[in-house]
Amino acid sequence: MNICRKDNEDFPTPLDAEFDSCLHCRVALAIHSSFLSNEELESVLSPNGWPKPTRPKRRNPASEEYRKSRGIKGNFIVDSDQYIQSNDLRHHINWVCDWVETSAELQNQINDLRNNAVISCYWWSKYGLGGPALWPEHLARLARIGVEVQINFTDYSDDEE
Image (tube, rainbow, N blue to C red; front, side, top):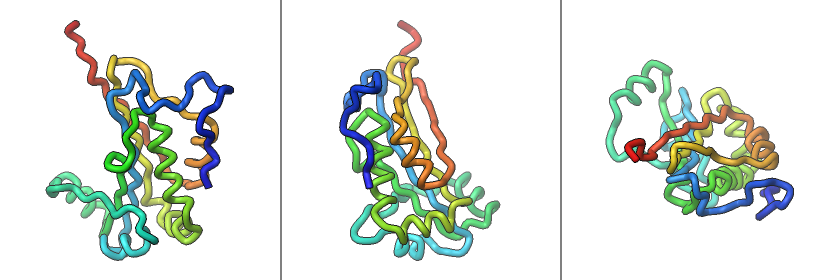
């Protein structure tokens, strides 16, 4: 259930797909399992035509080594980048939360795999300052999912001006 408002005059930063200080942003939900394969995870976590997992185009040796060292058999990663066209991180968070909140069974599966799940938020700065805005509703939705949230900032501003 999406409890986020479309806009809120109570907060200084309205939802804005053109979020001026952001060059690009995206959110990824990654779930790793030591006992389910990629295909098994996909069958459990992609109900009713929801997004298929995002798979890398080529194998990353560092990722493979990490998987082996952690005993990871399968992983499921869904990335908002191919579905949401917005520079406002809140639109991407809403998309992931909407997806998770569609099914109590899906929520239970994520809770069962909680120690091996993470939501990663990526935000690229256009000017070397600023950052995403989150309303209390977004924080509450992320908290209900109950997994670690990582926020990654990158600065792509031109320092030579």
